Length: 460
Image 1 (tube, rainbow, N blue to C red):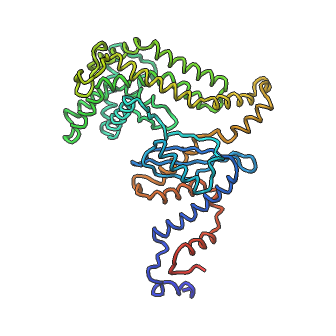
Image 2 (tube, rainbow, N blue to C red; image 1 turned 60 degrees about the vertical axis):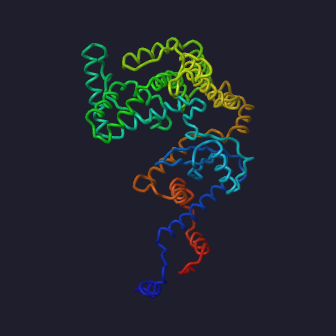
Image 3 (cartoon, rainbow, N blue to C red; image 1 turned 90 degrees about the vertical axis):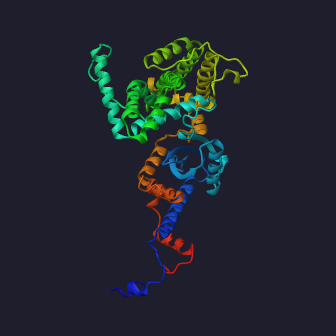
């Protein structure tokens, strides 16, 4: 045996020296992570930067990822994953406090920040419209209950197949090639770049099949599932849920074309502005003149699926259904039209105005100067200078945060879902920013580890 090795193994090993223990590994990993963050901070330097914040619930915990976007000293735009943090919630105050802590910790001055992007951190909150928030909670409950079991999943597809066969036999369904594939419910937001419309559309399409699946569970399912299936079925046939289901479907059909158009890599800027204008006009038209047609479709849907629909001219009642609780007399039409339909459309219009602010529209117009059609006829050097000065670091791509959370799914799965936040943060940083991790000198890591605390074995 090597003499030098023999001095520190077997009976010569110092007591309690455990450099392969999880604690030591986490300490070394943290040193590596801090060195990568230091390199990223050095790369940012005094440049103006933007941050992209995304939040997602992973195994019951809200995770916030922070991405830095900046122009390096050579003039190239860089996007660097910087940190992932667990937060209690994704409200604005919590996000602001956590972001401020991270920026201050690494001496990144807010005065140099030129833009902020929030993707999933504000996704479908429907602030101020409680009925819509409750609708999405119920939608998730229904989809998760039916889709979480392979047996229930198969039962739904079998019932839907029988339903399609009956409709075809009755001549009420087209029989063109590929028109009647059996499908299943889709999770809301399963594709983070996508719209919730696929989840809503799938439930509308499979409403009867889903209800029959739940009824079968109540009648013939295991005892422990009968009560839950009955509750889910009752929530599904509640008029408020059905009303919001059809309302959100109509609204999202209007906004879906704009969403898909803006996600295209090669989009004409002026056409994008035209799509925005058309979308806002259609939403406003639905708000002002679309009530009669919409409520007629709601009534037709309720009649088809045996759902009790209140008389729109009756007095609106909530809670214990005692009208005397209401101080002001409002009809059902007043409530469902003004408090829900008008409120959610107003919210949607406000969101579009916020996301396409005066600054955003200026960016789109200035970007049109790079349109190659007609030999760059619209090219103006003044617009190029203004674009570079004001907006160069701002154009975020969500792929960076998607890459961050994809990495989280690899590192933190159901078998390893107890990883501590700091450990997870360091693992993700080294996994995503391999370019910097490969540049770290091992001797510097050993030296920093050695001086970070009392060690039973000296490395030098």
